[in-house]
Length: 407
Image (cartoon, rainbow, N blue to C red; front, side, top):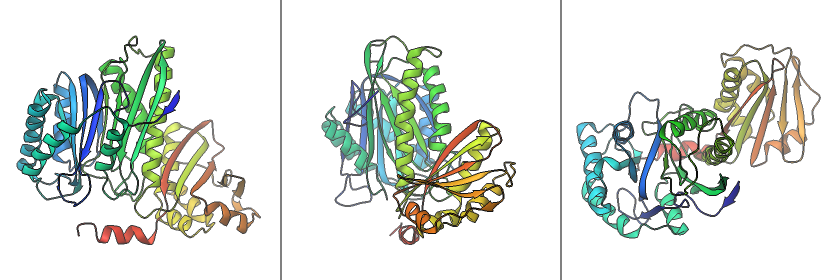
């Protein structure tokens, strides 16, 4: 696998663009398109929130019922959630406008929205934006970057990645773009994430790969404990690489799965590390667990703990907060027979063992907790299973950003 320059339109046959449409913001890109020259098989995972935005409902229906997908239109600033029948009508009108401009069926168009819940979409600006997107889209890498910037809300950086992997002697490319900074929590998380590939892969195989990958990537991140109405992860494959079809149980499947997971784990970590107001990425790795599910539960409990997040922000080696978060996770373990570590770029510090704290150096612990990436390791000493979760510290700026979000 090789990491290459590019993003969502890096694979053969994919085009993208990002433009200013004036949906909510001024002087910034706020609409994006992903377009494939050939029809795509599609797989997706959506929010677990009972309150689902209109785009989530539209996309789920299209992916379940349409023979193929060929484009995605995304706006930022307004979520099109809590908008009733008018919100669903906006999705339909968006798809119809894209159909006319792109020359594809309306049921081959997916839609995405992110931003404030409640307001209706300004359809005049949406439709005009679609015309601009259709004229601007291309395979150029700068266009993919523009698209990744156009879907940002409170993100501080755009998030894109692309890799090449050899499948049956052919070069297959996977490219992605994601957004998310606040209201991110496991199952799924508050985000939009789009992954495109030119691989030849069946819909059933892609769906299985998506479900497995999401479980250990996007479902293992948290920023603030809130799950959004708009969470969307969509994978598109147009088959233009010309490889032999990727089939489960083969070496090609394992190679593609590894690259696909790398792309999505990288994006998930970027989402967690760019939490609103965040100054540090927190990684919690649980090892020695009795079951995979318990390892996931324990790791997520630590990175979801507000007290742990605040301690990292203060560079305070308060390991009691970690132990407490493990204890209320719901997973059973013996606190008298386990270990906790802080790990930095240069060293690893044992801070708790078998029921009590160790004689560790507070100075060394503070150094580790002051790094941009803070790693916590919990060895449960119960088995061989492990899992990793990612979050961020909790800062003063998180409150400021969300107090002022609508204004």
